[in-house]
Amino acid sequence: MAVARTRCVTLIGVTAHTVEVEADVGHGLAGTHLIGLLDTAINEARDRVRSALLNSRFGWPDARITVSLFPASLPKRGSIFDLAIAIAVLGAAGAVPAQRIAQPFFLGELGLDGTVRPVRGVLPAALAAVGAGAHTLVVPSLNAAEAALVPELTVVPVANLSELVEWLREDELHRLPITAEAACLDGLEGASPGVDDDRDIDLRDVAGQATGRKALEVCAAGGHNLWMLGPPGTGKTMLAERLPTLLPPLRREQALEVTAIHSVAGTLPPGRPLLVRPPFMAPHHTATVAAVVGGGSGQVRPGAVSLAHQGVLFLDEAPEFSTSVLDSLRQPLESGKVTVARAAGTVTFPARFMLVLAANPCPCGEAGTPGHPCRCTPTARRRYLARLSGPLLDRIDVKVRVTRATRAELMADRQVAESSTVVAERVLAARERAVKRLAGTPWRNNADVGSAALHTDFRLPTGALAPLHRGLDLGTLSARGVDRVLRVAWTISDLAGKDRPGEPETSAALAMWLGVN
Image: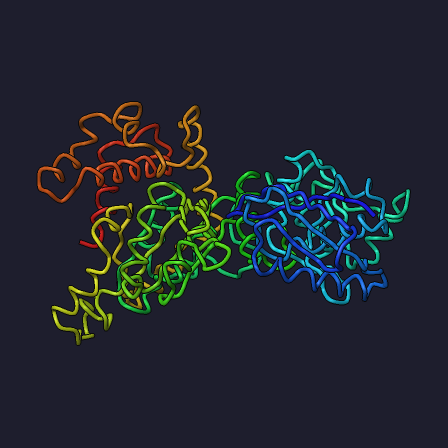
């Protein structure tokens, strides 16, 4: 009996850190001791591991067993360590060759019968394993496709503890392991924009809302935030749900980053180890701050703003959300990330998303609608929309009023409404123009261009700025508003195929900025 070592990972946010698992089976009073700044789930691992070994017909050493997870100062949470602990104990007891378990990483939760169950965060764990110089990763069978997305890594899927021990005892592989570079990752760059195959929705479904569809196209082309104001039943939710169908597919690095976030959160769709389309998140208006920006009493989990990273966050009936939730969006909208501070430490999640707000004009929703008298008092109407604070709305680039369409408008608009595929091609062309113009800068979308660059490298002629100067003189436009309008003007120019915006583009962008006033 001696000391055996193997490796695993611990997740802090969406970042995985290498952990060395050491097991010592030696003399002393029989018992099992786990050390290394562990949470309750890991402390319970001793019982799961013991039952899994016994039910897999392996002996449990009648000795003092000490399992150490190094570094001891790094917090460790979850059941991802079960498999590594079991293999380390078997190695220390001489049941498997100690040299065969020293280099691979072992991830997985053990059932009492020895089955290896799937765990969260396998993709960031696989990336950390490659960063630590590992070439082999042992994971649960249901997580194998996700782990295989990481190049230069041999992935060994296991369904139960018995077959893993058999593989470790063999000199030659008795079956072929899954290797890296899954087909879905290889074909990612060739993916085409348009409607997501998993959702039977199309932009042409929203009839009678030509203004809303145009606003959606502008937002998709430049990555801008959107606010839609209008009575119920006018298509605000339908428009928001169709925004992802206009966005280009995720690039390779974006897809891996988004997939890692959803892997940690446990929200990866079954059978889809890699997310190649921009995500769409629509939390309920009763969601808490922790649910929206991230948090939790135990392990800190990403919130809706991080799950919407590189995609769309939609707040339907936005004034019904609590003021604290709405105000918590201001910081990630500016920085593209959210930092959650807890007693155990600070975790940072990426959160670069397009925000879409939808609101009724008043609590009953009928204010300003012909033939539908409003039942709300003036005070109630003011309080309702006042929940959307000025600083939050100041970060919304495009504001549009959505009205009820007449029968004639509906019938006429159905003849000219374009499909998501057609609009997505224009969006992609506009984005490619922006990328070419922004080459050599840290930005790829017009919505991300810094304020200083807007007034220096991308400064417009005085004639094109005339509408903005009038807005500043009248007090209808703030300094931040000028920057927002300029970014939208560049997007409108890209959609029109122009080299730079003129007065028509800045006027149109200003109209979108003041759209609900």
